[in-house]
Amino acid sequence: MSVLLFMGVISCSEQSSEVEPCPMTVDSVTIIDTKQVSGKTYYLVHRIAGWSDKTEILELYDAKPEFNHCSKSNIEPVFGDSLELTQAVSHVYLNLNDKILEIEYQDVSDEKIDNTHLKIELR
Image (cartoon, rainbow, N blue to C red; front, side, top):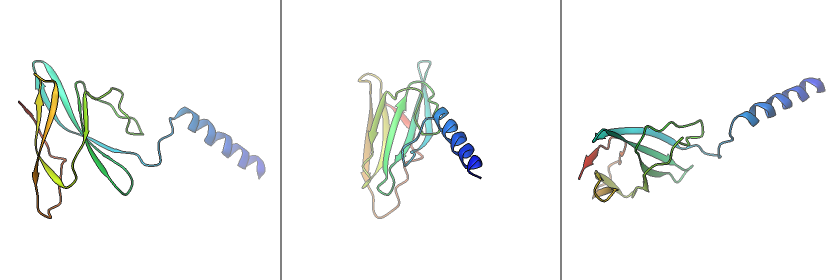
């Protein structure tokens, strides 16, 4: 019996050494929009991080990101910022002249805020 237990421990440790360990909580990531500008495609990603106190983050990539099992991207975003949780995002502008992403907010009542349907607009 102890041989089987030992074999189980060895097989688990071998598997876990092949796969990068994730933090206690794994972010939820979704590509919510794409925008093609001058032959380049930009990808807008909505990320939810945290356990009980969730943080929403918008990330912009200038190439299609691929996310591993820990929700880490194979490339760095060109922009990333946490969203204000007490306000709803009204517009997300890609400003190529200043090379920034501008996020505009609007006040909302007690409605549930859903930032997963945002679209990239050009400024």
